[in-house]
Image (cartoon, rainbow, N blue to C red; front, top):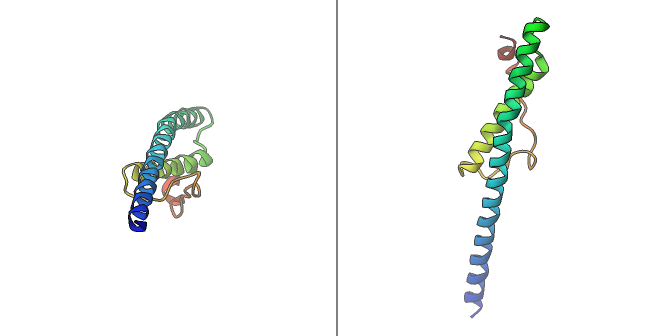
Length: 104
């Protein structure tokens, strides 16, 4: 009888874990949708800075690149490619070794 109780308990935990994963996927999909608005704002700001100040912001270049990496992490998570949850459950992605690429 104990075996059957353990099986029922494991089955419940599995379904509870699946429901939690579905909830996380919904939340991260909403964040993913908002990130497109943030990218549009960055593009508009960078264009205005380029036109009126002569060059785009290096800080916004770096943030845009890290935002792209974050969107990639969300895509991998919601498609079940990885079990590691993106930010805010892990660190914000840093762009390393790409400073030369961002200067071009």
